[in-house]
Image (cartoon, rainbow, N blue to C red):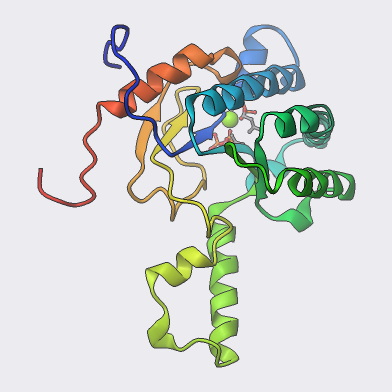
Length: 242
Ligand code: IPE
Ligand code: IPE
Ligand code: MG
């Protein structure tokens, strides 16, 4: 990482995407349960949301639970669902007071009924808020999202609502969960893993990737700002000559 200690944050990204990884390894190192790691992780998420809001970032997408995470032990999955329920119940009011608009992306029908109802209630309550949009990726998998979009497009062609020639990159973007959201400017993944893990594959085409070694439960708003400073130093070319 560049030494960013004396730099000032002058370029605020519009959209930050985060893979909050390392809760389990953090917990193991502290001799705690994986769920304790997720608990600490959810507190960090709260702090990062509030930092983003304060910085004037327009969109924050947090990877909270992937389509593949359903394959974890029933104990861990139910612990995560309980935590999520707790987060939504205890945070809804304060998210709303902070003018945050909450949206969920992912396979909603996979979520337990009580969680889905809660999610929809918070989305409804916050839908007209004008502060940061917090996108929570829940039961989210990018391949599933693209598959779903492809089916919808094919259906429209079959129903003669769209012709083959009309299908463009824009058509695909418009059928993703993120149809009204700009692509992320920067992706941050914690815990030292350098992979995408089925996250926003289409949307990340020209996103700057920043990988940090810190486990998510140890990640702080200060280190978050450091990663934005690193992003600020990158030269984005979008395929043009250097
Ligand atoms: C990220 O932490 C949170 C979720 C995937 C729900 P992990 O649970 O993946 O933690 P590690 O990667 O096993 O340390
Ligand atoms: C990605 O992390 C999903 C979330 C952070 C919610 P994982 O820990 O599930 O990803 P892999 O298995 O290391 O690729
Ligand atoms: Mg992990």
